[in-house]
Image (cartoon, rainbow, N blue to C red; front, side, top):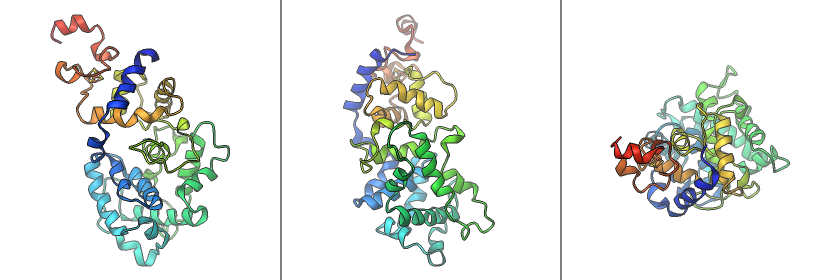
Length: 297
Ligand code: SF4
């Protein structure tokens, strides 16, 4: 794998020089950013992250409709949610695995949690009593709070729908849990484009949300050699990044993800696209570069 000392400079430069403003409008965090009240932003951030599988423009269209149905204050909508009155609010919602009852169940569970704890942050910290160590157990308890909420009125036969279960992946299943880590990054990191609303959790404990873009570029620049995108890959990449910035290892996530997503990295050797890239000296696609470049490969 690429030595840390050779990754530090290009990673720091990418983080410092990245044009965040140009990309925020194409990122899922545009949805919670619409809300100034931290209580609205928190609940919208969770709903957005839960649905953030697939392309932003595709799930964003459906999410837009759901947010319109929730009115000016999604927090108030959830707190005041009454099944008999509000269950039809999401009629027409369709996004891949998810259907209207999944969003209804989200509101019922979120209401129960908010009434018990006061905020999603307090729910999370209730399951994180030490406030240190690996984030996995606390994230598991947070996801379980939603999965194990009383949803008998939404799912009368007692079995949560596949779509609802898909909203809350469990760390114990070993997957990367990208959407939950994304939610945590938004809430915990103190610097833009993230919100820094959850002050009880240290950014040093976060794991990187590994999607296909982060996976590809991480492999290209030698942050991981793992073949499977899973929890251990997220730990490995984060561990490499923590060797560069232990206080805030996932700060590079947005820029790495968008560099790949925007086409500024094609995950292959391309003389034009790669020309300005600071990772060229460490990129696996340019290993043995001079000879292969001369050959025009
Ligand atoms: S050198 Fe090219 S392929 Fe490698 S990370 Fe940079 S843009 Fe991507």
